[in-house]
Length: 346
Ligand SMILES: [Zn+2]
Ligand SMILES: [Zn+2]
Image (cartoon, rainbow, N blue to C red; front, side, top):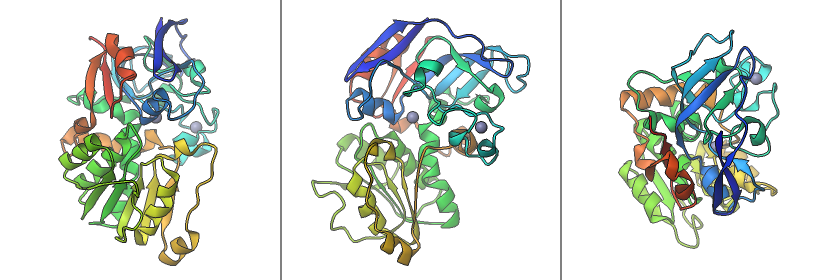
């Protein structure tokens, strides 16, 4: 079957690989229909994150179930399903707590479209994807929910949601500051959109990129156009801050701008690979500020943002740069984008 691989900077290509077998009686085989880019895809393809190819690409999307094992009960062949980026069993200690990104039944890095385990699981930009523990992994696509709007629910939409939703529930009307800066930048923009949807007070989006600033404005955010000094020297306070900058100094700057009993989430920490980041611990202690980071527990978080999209309360489409065909995926992926959606002719 055909599988799209990252080879090197701005170099991707389709390769012929063996089709996967059904991964046991609790597993399923799924044919991806709509796949959207994760922010990590753009960072890797443009050379911002060093990665040795070949690596299969694609890890958020919507597909059609082709075949299921005898013990699968939640989905059946022909069903349309939302596919998550991370492999999780649903029944280990961590999955039981909802911490599915840290499932202990598989290697910590076990995921689609991501080194070093991607050769085992593949990516979603291929004809057939093996899905273990299908009853945990696959979420039936709700009737009437547009697959284009649902494709990001496998990773980046829940990632933006978790940076805002649990914290705003504890702090109704909270003021929110999201600092972007890292391309492609969809997660920070989803955070902006959810802040507006969930009733935040002031919502500010800071970035240097005009196209991302324009998207934040469409969601109704106040925008700060960053120069070379970024946030340095700004002395305003926010209850909730989000780092989507991939710039190590930004975390300390944001923590100093986080108000009393506030919370800061860094969604872009994956690009700090290999280096520690200084944080102002005494300031955090005196002001009871929390710092969150880590992979999103997609399987657990997904239902809430999915309901907001289905009801029309939140629309992820303003973040989408382009919808392209399956045949155009390789050409489109090497160009800069905020978020691409790749749709197979169905
Ligand atoms: Zn991802
Ligand atoms: Zn598990």
